[in-house]
Image 1 (tube, rainbow, N blue to C red):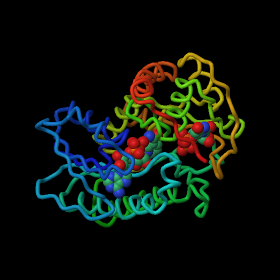
Image 2 (cartoon, protein in one colour; image 1 turned 180 degrees about the vertical axis):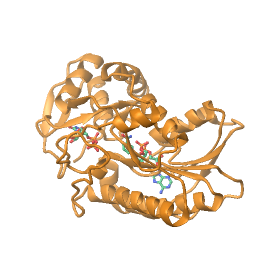
Image 3 (cartoon, rainbow, N blue to C red; image 1 turned 30 degrees about the vertical axis):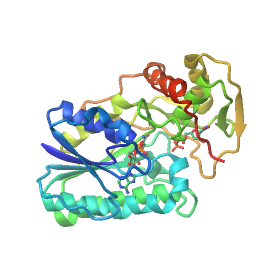
Image 4 (cartoon, helix red, strand yellow; image 1 turned 30 degrees about the horizontal axis):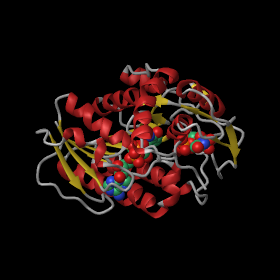
Length: 320
Ligand code: NAD
Ligand code: UDP
């Protein structure tokens, strides 16, 4: 198959490119580098089966060569990024999804949307299964991301119903691993970089809010299987083991050598208090579940950040 992946220079997109190439497929990567970096793809320079187009997918993209799949991963994903880029985030989730769907329709290609656990907002049902419609503040600061993704799911299903497009919708839960930017601003990269630099760990709120963290290799395997499945409704892809943010901080300190204090900062508006995927559907449909526990995943991730901290003086990025 030849697949087109938007957001290919980002954290998840670049791992997905590698997974498709490893599976013997050809890949066209698209990115405008707004939050991604060529460094995530430079190992593919000169590779026969990989082609890259620098393009903002919020503008239409026409492609002469046939593609069999379109995977739409372009979007700022870290809260720090999407709060700084609210209009671009809304545009890539709406216009960017529309353009990616148009491309898939023109090529008769299968379409996979990178959706998110944020469609559930600050959930009142716990854990979250796919039937839950969510609890989102449309006009709060996070609404630019959450509502863009909810729109993206809606237009994807409209293309399915009205144009017969074959959709796959992955609701991705917090994923971490090598290739995240040190200054990405999400919690795992922040805590690891702060721990390595022996700087205070920035806990937002009291750290009792929860997330469920999936190592990138597990996540990408789930996404890859979803793409090749015949399941067309949304599916949670994430690790169901839940941690408080304070527990994450303590684990990161153990893995980075300790020496940092935990310092509380104000909790951002509308920050979800809990998050945990129900992955029964993925288990049943894809015969998939994560294999890497958080400590092992951190051990595979810390050396990547240590290298960037030691060689380049990389720093974390926090909400001001
Ligand atoms: P990332 O910021 O590392 O990657 C996003 C990529 O998209 C970047 O390379 C960026 O330059 C590119 N991009 C953004 N807007 C673009 C545009 N208009 N045109 C072309 N390229 C554009 O983030 P990520 O963690 O790799 O997330 C990838 C996708 O997965 C996003 O759609 C995100 O919403 C979704 N997702 C990720 C997570 C996670 O935990 N990593 C969780 C839920 C959903
Ligand atoms: N968080 C934190 N310190 C940080 C960054 C994030 O305590 O330096 C918290 C944040 O408030 C949230 C959780 O960690 O409760 C996960 O945040 P992240 O930005 O990784 O993604 P989210 O799941 O909120 O989209």
